[in-house]
Image 1: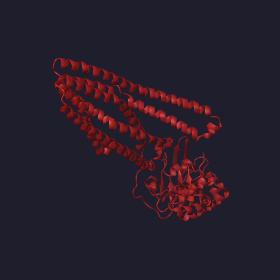
Image 2: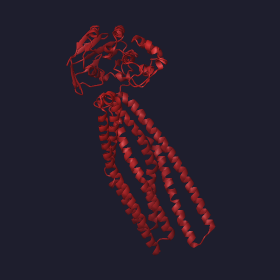
Image 3: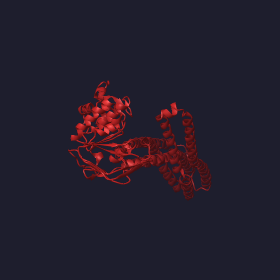
Image 4: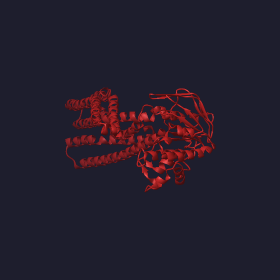
Length: 528
């Protein structure tokens, strides 16, 4: 992601480089002042030094502000890019990638973007400055005396040991810590999502005990990570004490032997103090680096999700389509089914009678699940080549049980698809027998629904899903069990509507009701 910000990153590096050079003005000014004082006090040089220092530090402050502004822009772009990428990726994710995964838990990983943003800001603001200040400051010492150049080599070696040698395992333990945190969050979500188990059926003890175990796992993982972090901090503090003491002793010896001026000694001590202060401050940057790696691990899983093949120019059909499949064998979790070969003529209505395989059948027929063996085709073209997802519901419409997202009723029907306006939404709601109830709501089509459909009843949610599926005028309509859950009167009205649609689409529905199946043109039975 940061490669996309090359120009801004280059600007940050330039700002940091100039600011790092200007940070040396203070020790150099002190060196000059000590030399001036040692020869006698003169007011004019003092004023000149003070003015040079003021201008330099003011310019350094301006560069720091500019650097902060650029980093802020990068953070905003990071968020927009990741959210935009996932918004394009999630509707196209191959459903095989989500087998055995709770999809909402994946979306929760988006919160790691905040971690990535903050860590990126710290590393760009402080990390680059620390590196440049260290390199430039130690180079200055090398110009004072060859012995100080050797001191630089030793100091850089120790700093490298702190950063890389003692940091071994830091990224791994940070990722483990993050994983335990998400397991705890997932468990708390389960507690809220299953009130019958934990509020009514007495599962409170389990909720508390498992939460305690997960909290203990987090503490254990945090301890393992902190062990790596604290040894870096402790060794860095030791390096700080050793370096300042060693420089004072070495510099004093050089001054005594006339190989270093008093001003150079003071300047050297200030430079090393500044470098070590920056290095000690790097402890925060190291921690943010670990957070960044853990966040990138979580978000990286989302960006690595395999998507369905793109079909920019899908074939459009103006009449009902024929669906056909060979002998299908498929499994999902512990479920396994075998569906005999079948051909559904265009413009007909087929009922697949089953009491337990409805969801599995529809996953295969919609292309959400690739069967273990067998092929599904529409108009003689294999399903995966039909670009169902790129036709905005005009080829295939699918009514699934209660897949309602947070938004208005209008949003849940129209989905911002071309040609579906309020009039079309009202029309399909009338056709599925739901318009009267919607019209009686204070905000009508603009009524906001929660995830799952509240305040609508379960029956009304089923009707809404059918309205969503038929709104675009699909040439193939798949309905999963929804008709079974309607009242007899609503079933009668809906079946009459579906029969009237056979002139424009082919209909396949799953049902456990013999009476509903008998009203279709054909039926097949899928039993255990």
